[in-house]
Image (cartoon, rainbow, N blue to C red):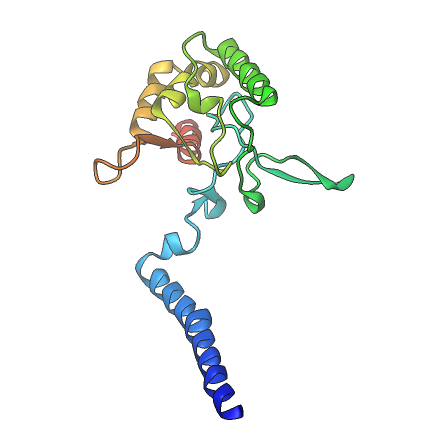
Length: 200
């Protein structure tokens, strides 16, 4: 029996070392050599200090900044660990809300968000400004969503709207390889460029 068990154990240990240790270390090393910034989390720095990641959205609530998609991520309730509380852009708990199209709570939240957006701009509200993404961490918005926010940001910063429209236009990223995905604007990159206007 031991002669039958030994090859199975040797194979288990060998495959564990190969696929559980060797392969991940090799892929991490290769990624670090070929794509060092991406392998390190696509960290964005300003003045040598990390301010976020280009892959993970973050909450901008001030009228002076462009805002991303709503986030449905949550965290444990400090008062009751069996419950959760909203925690926008909680990267430790990436998830959507799991509310379906017949959910009254979802309909009320979207309606309230649409009304709040209409208070800042009477135009048609872009859908990505009132709906959450599947991850809750989407770092990008559509160019239309960024342009929709221009009047609010321009007023808060006392800047001409045309200047901000040009800034948004300069930040638009096209489709991958010209065909995959949709044009988008990274909110963190846009806000860093916005802060850069005041430094010039």
